[in-house]
Length: 403
Ligand SMILES: *Cc1c(COP(=O)(O)O)cnc(C)c1O
Image (tube, rainbow, N blue to C red):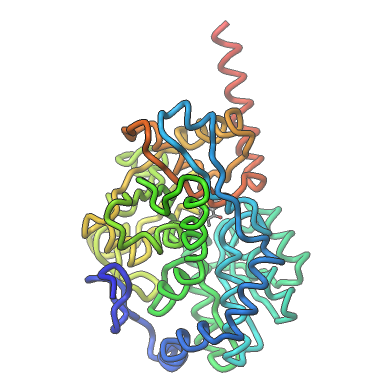
């Protein structure tokens, strides 16, 4: 078995595990003992693959970006997760988990969300299956992510405000866990990234692994090889990255690049560069790298992109980074915004702010002319238009003062 995949006790090297309250023990045990058997049953795979094809719109294209390639002097391909239904990779995971919840006999779904993208993907699959859906969201996030709150409500989900603490993602997660403790029998908790107690990181990575499974045959069609020289992906919790890396982890010639959000700069005090600033600790049931104070209080992360401001990273990524298998870069808010515009103007594609961080590091890397680079285009930018508008206005303001 791969040294980069989860071991029998739920660890990736020294990271991972299931550090959970006693009250959740039987739920997590049940999930742990059954998830592999259930998700690899023929009937499950048939239904999963059919929904990925006809509902999500897979396979997502692997697109050769000609003008971007000319600019950076390498062959750059984009894996178009932005073209999925609901606009990002997150739907791959929620489709898998809703099918699993049905097989576990669950009648009620809970989820946490920060920016609302995972909440929308969860509300979508609950509508698809006719299952009750409750999404916990920090009160502050509800106010600043109004379009996604409206989407969830349109889809029939109940959005419950988390009123404690900083009223953001980590508080919403706490509320979701509290709900699960109170409703262990009939409820499944759909976690949105490769985080949380074992088996969630492994389960979510398997559902997202369809990304790299497709990359292999698609690159073979384009280039006559399944193996790129580089795979680049942004990392919040790390689910789009985990899916993009999955079938390449044991191919040492494929260099794996993880990109974190540096916010206003790594040393600015307003950042989400977890692997640089973090240390080993326990967050949401998992031992991993996280941003914390000396006495173990979680430090509020910051990034312009709501999907990257998570104070930890998935345990598999912590292991990939610590073992040297993955290389980490970071990109600031400003660099990400500049990359959004570059992709718009060079390729006619408006990426999500999260995704733009991955593009921002092309400038910091050195390529040989024949290098093949795949960038995972995790999502589209429609949700970020308010931020882009502000950026454009600020830019045209600066141009006027220059004249
Ligand atoms: C949520 C999100 C991310 C970050 O989540 P990961 O689990 O790290 O993939 C990245 N890109 C987009 C478009 C997202 O919606």
